[in-house]
Image 1 (cartoon, one colour):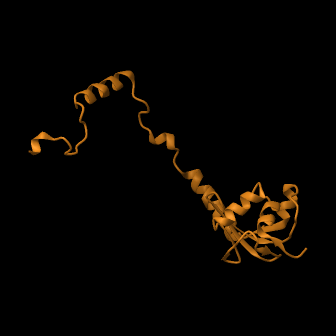
Image 2 (cartoon, rainbow, N blue to C red):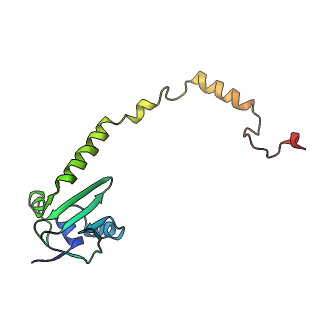
Image 3 (cartoon, rainbow, N blue to C red):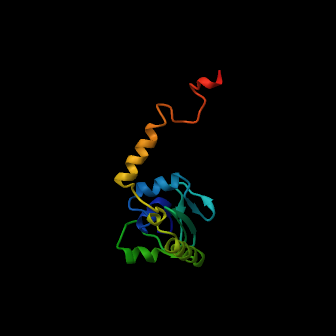
Length: 142
């Protein structure tokens, strides 16, 4: 076997869980072979460069082997070799996520207490039925 469909290869190399998911990602133009947007029927051979996106992760791999069946992960990892640029980009993204702020820390006070909620409700009731700043129904504009 010297050529294999790209959707089948992506499935066998364990980039996607099912072949239909691989075909969907190819259909969304998230997979490129040798710099060209691929179709699911595109055939790959050893030595081709495949760029794909898995969620927020952009990966670039070189095809090293072909397999028509999905095997265990250690065997699937022998079907490709990830480029040094791709590994460096993944490490940088991982570091960026690690250094990113925790979303929960941006909430200073959290939920209002019972006293704060009552004061908010009291303030809102003082606004009346019209609380927006628009000119709709404003009698002073006449």
